[in-house]
Image (tube, helix red, strand yellow):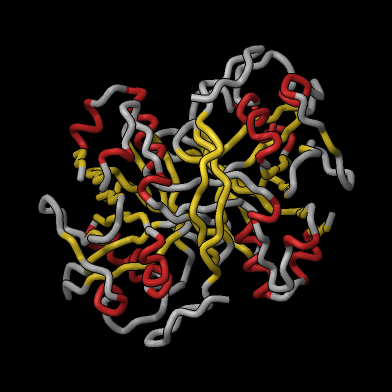
Length: 210
Length: 210
């Protein structure tokens, strides 16, 4: 078993530390965030692995933005335009999704070949190829004093699920049927293979698969 | 394509909405959080899917706690004792991990059969069976005014990686080699299958696998 204490982590090579620490939380969600600059009308698309559930009622999602990074275009657009889209990534276009993280001088849609989709008069672009699309409005944002990362809270306004058979009657969305891709570290991509769904846990009762 | 707008989501059955909204971010990390009550010395263990990367330098991790839930034991212990452990879950004990979410009257270690491990004099219990263990100190915490969830920021103090061959020279930890389990929704568990690692993206250069 390899052990790294805080000193070893802080003294490690910068690139080593970045990848290593990014791996520690485990598998991460992967979403393309679509935005538009309300002045220039230029669209923006970037992959994010720090999107997480914040609440179901009201339905809220959180995104953590690194300070001073290339992703700031996305954050600036969200703060100006007050809306954005989340788009799951499939194996058929995960390389284009990765490529959208480069420092393009033009819209990442045009640069990488992913298609813009505008649905139900929502003011931010969705990714047409995405099997699960979520339209969000800016609900709150705050800067974490500890390292200047910015936490954006989005209110979930629209959800589009591509395949009827991926959505269960109980609300469960089968990410494998959708082909949703997960990420790990800073550059790895994965599909999922289901072990099981397990019934609500109760003391002294055996675990039951659903 | 199925479409749900905000009204449809808010009017849906409570259980449907909970599972549906929990699925929207995509695959989620899964960590068992180990804590101890400094007064009674009773240990506590609970599964969390809202653990995420906050920063690499200094190394920080974030956890979002729902308000007024059974998980509050974990939060109370962290606020009192100022430390906790994160422990990846393997297929061999993911059912015990799920079972630790039940409302036990005693320590979830004893109740579910997972073994406590104490390493390098750290004051919180690790899960002996876990292939990746992280020891954290409380660095900051804040309550999100939008829905009273509590964001805990942990400073990463110790990392233990079970298999030497899972850790690359570049800092990448191969979660598949570790057997790390991911979650989705409120009750689904998955393993990962790697598509590829992709080199740092640059404009107008083809995507390269590492």
